[in-house]
Length: 165
Image (cartoon, rainbow, N blue to C red; front, top):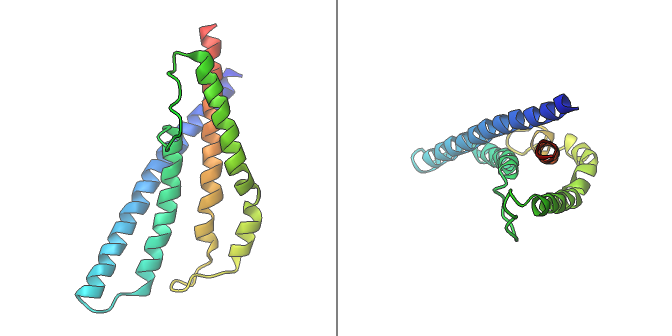
């Protein structure tokens, strides 16, 4: 059982590193595309339409992958500050409330994602002419990664609790 828990945590950590790098690359690509578009528009008086479209898609992917990083780091915006880690009961209760809130908020989005992806499968982007599925996939992927991080946090909390007993 401990090995499975460690594997869950290891996968969460690996996903986090991949999302950090990917998010940074998407935002860097977005910056380069926007700079190229500005230069093309104001220097050459001819901005290609695909740069604006591709930069928007980079923003979507970068933002959603960045959201998974913030979620794992517990750096997302909060209404109430969580209790300190040394307050085990309060920290466990806060983690449980967070898990319930995340499930209530993101669960339905993930549940309806197959239909959402199916609807975007045959739509194409205006400038690039590719399926919008490639952009839409970012939503269920980011939510799945967040759920994996949540599972890893629950497992890590349980492992810490077993170690203290």
